[in-house]
Length: 414
Image (cartoon, rainbow, N blue to C red; front, side, top):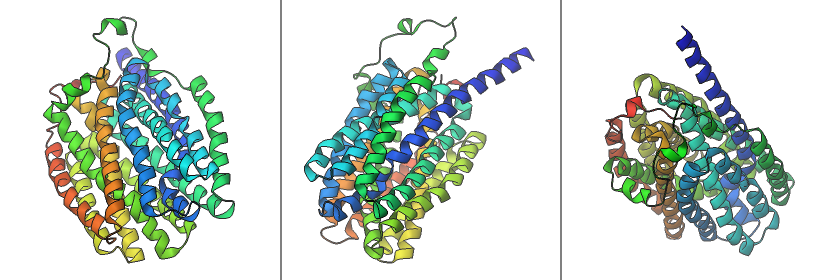
């Protein structure tokens, strides 16, 4: 009975730290998120540049994001998840500068800085989650994590679109700068360190083995289990990169309303959010097999219908919802999938290498689609349908447990 009480108290302490992290992450993403959905509109409406310029900006941001993920993975395994996250929260200031300065040249300069900081926010928060909760709760933990992201992005998208329409993108940028200046020191002061929870009877970190290094990534890439997760991450997010660039822009062209685009982004995220909790609970209760399969079906089906209904406003909106739902389900399942693939001590690097392929997928989808859209609008989405076929096959492999480490069932995340 005493052991059970201690276990419950330990779980409460873990969730307390993770919930505090969720709170800071939510507030941060409210101010960082408008740049995700409104960048194509900002570039076309304010800077008066074509979609190809947007693809360059997004690609610069994503390229730096992808490379710096690898740095963030080593940083999180050495410096700790908390301080990596604190550095990442400076990204709100970068967002504000991009929207406030309204210069094409400065946008090309600041976008890579934002990519660097956003990579640290991603790795810091994901590693914090992986070390703060046990494997048996990572399904629902991952669902809450991405629920936090989706709701914060939904709120940010709705508010950001409205502010941009009524007061201008410059005002929106100033709000983001002020938020970043306040949020960073507050996080450093109030966020607990999950690394500090080590039991005194355990060996010190220095005695655990070699320090994390960049050479570890080569070993991970030689592991076919890890490659299956990387391939799934790439192929799914190639489609997401295309939608991020062209779906938003097409909806704007069909409606001529920034407010509609912002509200659409908000609406689909609010619809997706409760379904993520169901999927996370199911992954903990019944395993990740059928949730992964269902997400793959939605992504592949969404890619097909978006292609067919590209010029139909409501058909495009519904198809985009289905595709986004599948993609966000994958994202919610990934924390558990990655924890199943390796030990707690290497979670920073495992998260970094899989998220690196997320960045490569976004980069490929954004750059290639920006070029193909100049031929005709459906072409980049046709390519997406082709790319999502291997995604579906990899999802079937992962659903059968191909990615799991032999001792994943007994692994703990912190």
